[in-house]
Image 1 (tube, rainbow, N blue to C red):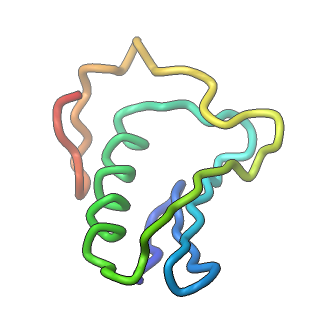
Image 2: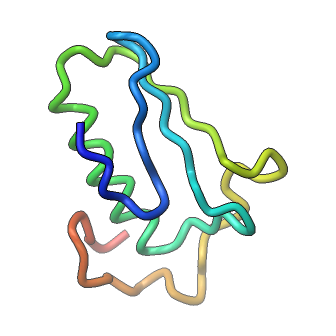
Length: 85
């Protein structure tokens, strides 16, 4: 499974179990780019018929997702997976 995301990655722990890790250590902000990457990641997970369970965690043990970026919430970035929220 490709791992071309800047913030999110998927790692197969076992054949049917994957783990997705948010890799922004300082501040896991749910912004338009995170939304786009999550959509691409979900497509990859859906296309991998072996994965049955996915757990999500953060590279920063203090934060999973801190909050939604209300300032940039209407932005649709020019990147794969981008869509209005």
